[in-house]
Each structure stands twice: as structure tokens, then as C-alpha cells.
Image (tube, rainbow, N blue to C red; front, top):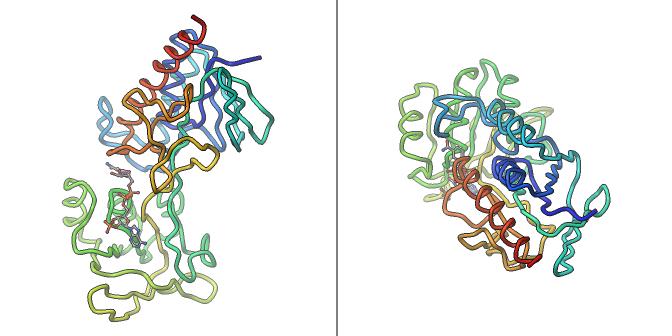
Length: 304
Ligand code: NAP
């Protein structure tokens, strides 16, 4: 069978594309490598998605999924896309579970947390090094944690960690944070959070589990040690776009038009994997809706 649309990725962008595609009566299937929900699954609290004053990421993801199911979207989980073979009027989406033929593709494959790339990071992953405070914060009850990064992820997760840990040190390489001002103010007002700015982590060390980080002051090169039980790394996101050769920027984010069209006809991009000025649930949802409508128009043109 040839689908109308294959949607790659089950985060807010992909699920919204699915809702809009089904409402346009398109034959659509959504492929997801892990579980539906994407990055928001590991977000403790969402308070900037209109209509929901406060909701957990997991709860919001479940609502998106339920909504897409209501319109009959087909889901295939545990499917990793390895390549897209562009045959012109149809595309062959190559996956770990076989090939799927389709008229259009919407890439909404999101991002993966970036590694810090320092000594000890790999060795202590799961033994004190984590990329998910929501998943692992509980293990650090009444202990000391370090959060690396100065963006919204680092700051919101540092605030989340204060619910359980004794103290959180936020290590940031500059003197100024990148996070939204409202998040910064909440963190500055939290007595459990201490900022260590102008500093980078040089090494994560310990015996069996993490015991300390070695820090370097950027402006002076001065080296110091900080005792900690956990290191939570939030230094940005890498796009999950290795399987496609559509045009990308220097960091691998897909370049797409206002209509979410990529450099390849019939292949659209939506959400965090796209070169976009803002990566939020609200913007991913908008991208997903536009991508599905554009895919519908593209298919209409094909059959004219
Ligand atoms: P981000 O905004 O790219 O921030 C990454 C942070 O890590 C920056 O502060 C950066 O420092 C630092 N960094 C990068 N490489 C580093 C290195 N090698 N060593 C030390 N520090 C390093 O990434 P993010 O925080 O994951 O956020 C991603 C997107 O999701 C953003 O658009 C963000 O607004 C959004 N988001 C929003 C919310 C919300 O509540 N509104 C929550 C989470 C995420 P510099 O500042 O010096 O570059």
C-alpha cells in the first residue's frame, strides 16, 4: 500500500500533524522510535502551553496521543527510520521494521540532549550522571546535585531538583544566563540554588559513583573541585536528522520554508528538528499543523 503521509516522530509536532492529516482524510501513519510524546515526556511541569495553567509533560503528551487516536491516526512504535529514498512522486521510508511507501513525509523527529564531552561523563552515566531530572532526581533525595548549562532546560530542571535535593549548583560558562527571564527570576529566588558562573566542567570524577566535578574558571583558567552526588547535563540539543539528506544548517537542523517545505518536494519538517527561532510545545504544534496542510496540498497537486 502507498500511504498519503508518513509522519516521523511522535512529539507535539508529529502528533499535531497526525490530527490535521486525519481530519483532512489523509491515509497517515506515525512512526515512533521509543514511546509517543517526545521530549515533553521528561518535562516535569509545563506552564506555557495555552489553556493549561500547569500540567506535567507526560500528562500533556497523553492528551495529544488520545486526541490523535480519536481521529484514527495509525501508530507504529519501536520503529527507527534509517533513510528516506526519494523516488519522486513517492518516497520509500526505510525503517528497522521494513520499508514504507508514501506520497509525502513529515519529519518531526525532534532532538536528543547533547553530551558535554568531558572525562567521566560516559563512565558515570547512570551512576550519578543524568540527562533527565524528572527520571532520576528522586535518587538524589537530600543530596547535592550539579546542573550544567544556562538555558531553559538547565534552569527549569534545577528548580525541579530543589524539590528533593539539599542543594543544586548551576554551572554556567558565561556570566549571563540564556534562559527566559521568568525562569531566571524563579531560580535566583530559590535559596537551594547556587550559581557558579564563568565556569566549565573539566571532569566528572569519583570511585564507583560520582563524587565531584573538576571546574575551570573560564576567565582565569583557575581549577577547583566541587563535591557532588549527581551531575545533570543540559547543554543543548542535537537534531535527530541523520537519516535524511534534505538541506540542513551547520548544526544539522532541517531548513524549511514558512509552509514547512524542505529542499525535497513532498518532504516536510516540523518542530524542534527544524531550523527555527523558538523550540516550544506551542511552536511545534503550529509547525505540525502547517506541515500536514502543506502535505495535503502537495498530494492534491500530485493527483491533478
Ligand atoms: P539551549 O537553549 O541551547 O541552552 C544550552 C545551554 O548550555 C546554554 O546556556 C549554553 O551556554 C550551554 N552550553 C552549551 N554547550 C556547552 C558546553 N560545552 N559547556 C558548557 N555549557 C554549554 O538548550 P536547552 O536549555 O536545552 O533549550 C532548548 C530549547 O528548548 C530552547 O529553545 C529553550 O527555550 C526550550 N525550552 C524551554 C523551556 C521553557 O520552560 N520555556 C524549557 C526547556 C527548554 P551559552 O548560553 O553560553 O551558549
